[in-house]
Length: 147
Image 1: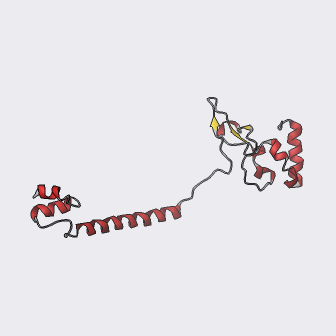
Image 2: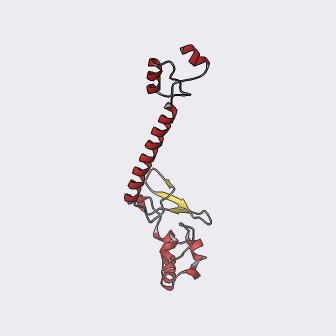
Image 3: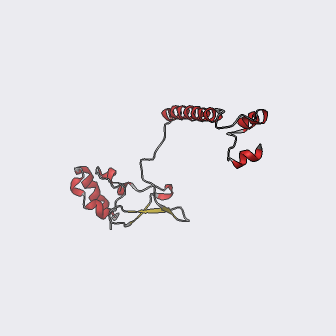
């Protein structure tokens, strides 16, 4: 009978189905209902898992950093990234791996899609900055932060 099963390519669904077939040679997967039982078990397992994961996601309070992380960190722990407009290299704020405030458009009160800009690209957007930020931008320029 085992050769017949191999020849017809009929295999038991799982170990439970195989045990039943050993007891009753008429128990074949095409007629036995084991496939339906296995499908129902898989469905219930998946839906229970999905419900549990949904509950966990509702409770999840993920913390995200407000600052952009740098792309590259060298052996000394200092990192850098690139301006998202002109691709100029920009250094990080120390060993923490985040960009400096002066390269963050949000720091200057700008609502742009870019998250990292160099001083030159920020200078092109100075008209969009609030008055107090324009003054601070020029102060940063006097201190030698740009250029």
